Amino acid sequence: MRAVAGALLVAAGVVYVLTLDRGGAWAYVHATSEAAMVGAIADWFAVTALFRHPLGIPIPHTAIIPTRKGALARSLQDFVTDNFLAESVVRDRVKAAQVSLRVGRWLGEPEHCSRVVAEGSSLAHTALGKVRDEDVKALLEQELIPRLVEEPLSEIAGRLLDDIVDDGAHHGLVDLVLAEMHSWLLNNPTAFAEALTTRAPWWSPQWLDERVIAKVYVELLDWVADIRDDSRHQAREALDALLRQLAQDLQTDPDTIERAERLKARLLCQPQVLVTAASLWRALRAVLQESLESPDSAIRGRATAALGVLAQRLREDDELQRRCDDLASDAVVFLVDRYGMELTTVITETIDRWDGHEAARRIELHVGRDLQFIRINGTLVGGLAGLAIYALTRAL
Image (tube, rainbow, N blue to C red):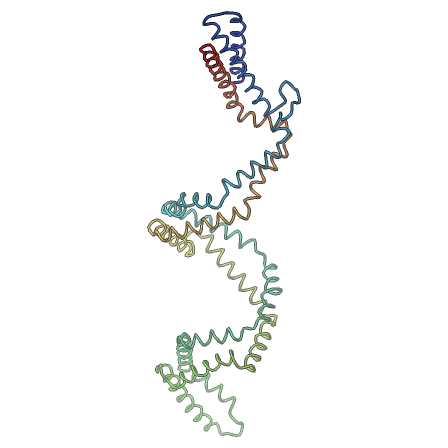
């Protein structure tokens, strides 16, 4: 393209020379070629001045890119930041992308759901394997347990116990304990008798001990059965009243609160607590890793089913789509606000690392073809303008 533009300048010069001192219609051709040379030379100077000094002469305000690449880079960075990373632009682009709908359609394919679950399971399995037992133990010993010791939990425990009693959530546990107790008593009369025999006075006759123990056994068995079968038994109501009073005391009574906190501190400071917590973590991790590794595990099956349901809702629920798109927009805007400047500084840092002449060469390689069209157009437009001016002058 540079050769084409140069050839037009040479052609205009040749025509100019050939039409010197010639009249008639050739005078118009001569004026056209003269103006075409002026336009071509002027635009050559303008294009060249962007990248180097024309003819090597250090004319002021030439070689703009090599000498001012830092300022140009900062201007380009500001332009990108203000026009491409503006909040309104980002929000409109994310909204137009319909992220939630496209995700729903993509997850609607069973193989895609399976792939997401498989990749997520593999990632979770690897992450769990990277967690060292020493780190978990240190976290429990240095952070979690000391915080629990220092944090007053009596009021929270009281409120929780109060809600449990009000909802009757403990009744299932009471029923289970009573059923197991009645079953044990029914199946272990000998063990019960032996336990009470050890508590009998040494001076009481054996026959008396046996009759008393038998009577106690029958009465206790009937009493446990009555409590088990009667949901409004006095013993149950007494237990509810006791738990409700304990819940209130844990929230309001200073003595109860102090005793509860001391008990909590003693329990948490026992060395076995740390050992037990670490053992529970290892067992839980082993179970999770085994489930995540197996393609037919319940965890992966439920995750796949849940993704399928989510995909269907994302495709059909307009309100859910709107909320998800809003969340996506907020997330992208947050990232742009927080890290957008760091992203655009790549422009400045990259160009600053370039040598001035190297930067000019790279930019010229990308835009030089279009710039040569400026020279070509300058030659043609200059010639036409010269023709028009000469014709108008002759007419006047």
